[in-house]
Image (cartoon, rainbow, N blue to C red):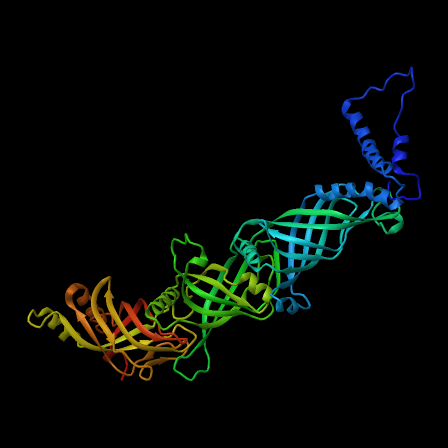
Length: 546
């Protein structure tokens, strides 16, 4: 083989090994294909030898080695396909020198597999500067460390180096492909050096792969590859229940800490280490329920601002649950308050709420540039009925009413069809943060029929009913007006019969309230519009209340 420079030239050996036929001997019978296969190596070497002899002066041995070795190595490098199994991204020891001049740097460790022709020696791809292109546009350079290629055949190896991004606009395009696409292609180009070592120079492969001696360094080899990478397909984000926790504040129902557990499924080729602190804005989904528009074009009202914990990383496959925490962040505009109320209404009625998580930035400049503006759809699950069996704010009503007088009045055509009475209300707080109730209007429904209307007056924050976290059954100190309407007289009479004390009635009836509750929680002032189901109604004078 041509690496043994101490022996006679390999093209002479090749020529002497070609069989000949003496005159008078029978010709060897062989197919044209087999003869061509035997002659092809000789022709290739003769071409190399012809190049050697065509020079005006005898070249040194190294020129013979390069003239024959470079085309051979170039052929092997050009023919193989490189498959990427995994790309690990992690922050380098220092990236701020690049950041200071408008560039980004991050360390990569790439797991690859390939199938090469056999070198006949142990091969190494020397350190190189590889240009990276996405859809024909260059976005950066991968400075690699030496990459072992073995002796050929099927191999798995690693390519390690530092990615320096100097074209941020193109880099952001490939970042979006990583987030949203099923797969995409990246082009690599460089002129590299391949180092070959024989048995006497460190080749530690098996004997049939180390048939050479000596060593060779083959520069000027073109390395041009296209690799197909898997995208994250929008990531699959699963959210846990919303939690609100009071924080010390100088104002009533000031900002509360919002906490949501989440987990992410990452089917991409990328293992993302050292993401560190990610800032995320949570929006309502303005295109729901059709979702025909991309998430980034469907941002509704910003609902909250949250962050991951320091040291956050994201591996491949399904992650473990992790916490994001922050604050409700709702502009003081009616439209925004209504949209925020929709989120809370879905939450309180145990319905999933479509939301969009938009990446606002990262404490790591590399990931901040890559991910900023990326938007992911997710559903916030509804509140679980962990206590009391429901998420009502209004749980009981105590009516100050004389049932026989009320029935007689309703049946008397001269007294009208409306009863004006008063009631006390027991309220609960389904949140883990303090809830201020500043007003209430509710339609009273019994067996599906409208039977009345109740309203609490609009209160200032100083006058509001304050419900501590997870409060159950707080009784309002004041009575509030209720109107009972006889538009559905049979239903109203049945209600009055049920709340009558035993044995005349059941002592209690259950009604639904189509309620609008003016509230303040976590620094926001939503109007909570949702049905309060199975609210118990009793006569105050038979309830044991003073």
